[in-house]
Length: 290
Image (cartoon, rainbow, N blue to C red):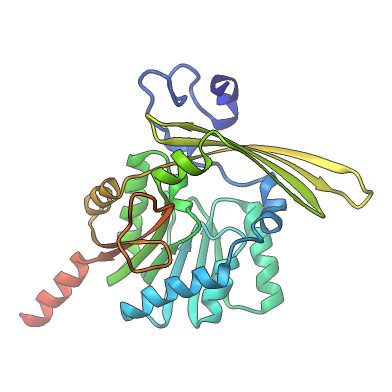
């Protein structure tokens, strides 16, 4: 079944398919930018408590001395969180690889009047004009980077663009979530403007979850238009994330069970990771004390 879908994911059918001998997730298959799903993303994400999630991240930032200033959001999507952080008083930059998602983010920006800079860039190759006080990535965007070497690239870029002592906060769906909550499950949702069928196929050995999305969106003439997409996410152990952060030059600071400040546990479905830039900070302190 997965070999038949390989072309959609941009994979080599003989090697780069979960379950195939010698498989290692390829950077180019990372998640896949939302296209058709962008048309109905906000419609089917109406159960996400964006305000609550944003306030939790804001609390983590404030505890680390970041109450204002430039903040970058990686994988900003349609700008739901970006808008909230702008309302908190942060100067926001949003990066996403989906033009369709950013179109909707810009529409929200025009309605709210928020001063947000949106950039159509892949988080594995993003570029900024200068550094920022903090980088955030919410709604499991990091899980879409299914190749660990590509994830090091992301972390290295974050490290490069953080101010001395800057903070990086991101969330992850856990192996428990993929194995026990959605793995090999079919989920169907219906709204007045459309329906979504969400099929999951979890490859336990590779810790990769394949999402096959089928959407039926209601048109103005009353008929429904069908869209299909395939996405991949990878489950990462916290230990592995710590190793990759440190390899990229960042300092792992903490891991929390989502929306708490408690340690993650075996049944945590989502975790938040806090890391810091420290080498530029150490150099600055050293120069000041000389």
